[in-house]
Length: 323
Image (tube, rainbow, N blue to C red):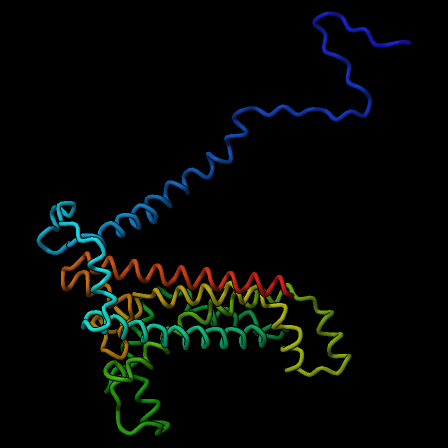
């Protein structure tokens, strides 16, 4: 019986075909964590720590008398939360009214932005002359700064000198006289129109990217089988866009529900028909100087958005499993 004899101090010979061991340096194992560390620190500093501080502030009677030293504010426990959800109190009634307004605006804006985005993406799916120019023009509302876009719409919605009344009333005769668009019930319409105008290019961009991943052979096979445009849209396009739509609708919902800039720039102090909940919480904190109550409202809003988001994602996973 023969064997391989190795001298003392020599490495044993590797058998033919045996896998070679790879030795990693300790620094390479730490490299991924070092690369993630700056983003983790930024996330802690920008989101996590302020969120924890906000939760703690919601448990205090923090008013204008304790602004210089807010840690000295008396501890109130869940008092602020009781005031915010007390159905018989005026504060809770106003908060619930703002919540309903925000839900209505969000539903209309998400539906409108998605429909306009889908229509534009399907229309520009096939190549034709001028398609690149139209795509660029469609993305202009999304590229404009929020302040510039909303201020422009604010001038357009002016009663006497605005272009909206000039077109609807003077040219098309669709309205009687020059209505106020930034007051009363029309303020809700103005807010929805501007929000849809700002968000639909993002839906268009996302759905265009999703359409690029659908093979053209499926449309050709459906056309050979006699499927028309509506049938191809319903049986091919929408089912294959379902993963994209799942993420898109969630993002549009969160952006619209949390939107502060549009309503604040458009109205400064929104009327009751356009009182978004973000503006309501801002007023409760910085106009009445009750930062504890405003923090409690913010925590309640955060909890609501978390429940909706987790429920939406869970329902999507269950649907995927059943499918």
